[in-house]
Length: 155
Length: 139
Picture (cartoon, each protein chain N blue to C red):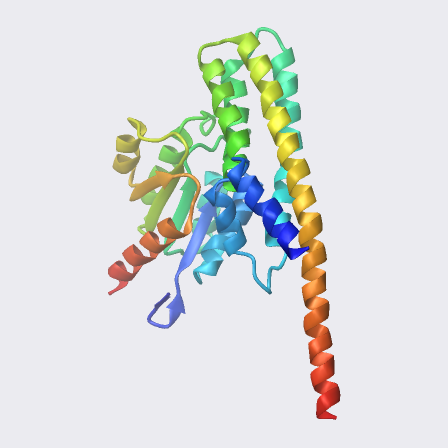
């Protein structure tokens, strides 16, 4: 199981879904914050729903408010950057480029890419965290059982 | 890192909750006592209430919906926030984190009193640089 967790994690980096910012998050995870990474990721996904909905609405209004679209996407990109979501970030940048030149079709198309990458990463991370939980619980149990054995021996 | 026994303190100013959360933890990892606020107005409020910090870390672009003088989407809010802090007599280090890269805004920011700015996101190297500067200042 541990190998599976490591494999899933490394694949996310190798396949370009995550960048070194994710390592920063992992670095902040320890015994006092054992689920820090997952918490940050969950917060990102909860928060980003609002931003995605906002972009959807703004894209529907005519004439298109490119300044507003750029602003919301900028915020979304910032959040994505802070969790190391490399592919999502790339699509956000592309979207902003279409905004800058006022290309409506480009924005609409690119927004689909943003949502796809956003959803794909979510699935992969959920998968990884599930395995990570199992490993984490198994480690805790085994260290607890060692303690129990030591205690029994001491008796 | 400590300054004559007490820890350094930081104020994070960022409108994104994910980033606030992350930056708070990152700075705390380096033993900075950290407070977080959403925008320039809230930062000013803390200083008016008598809070002091060794460093203020501000996001470069932070529109506040309700204040027309803040809304801009560029680094205008940061320029105004920095100017307002300096005008209040706040003389601690103020640093910006940006996602827009180098631009003409940087000169304006420096003129407003920003000490320096870095590319987003905040990371351990940047925090170490900040701490080195703080240590130099206090020695």
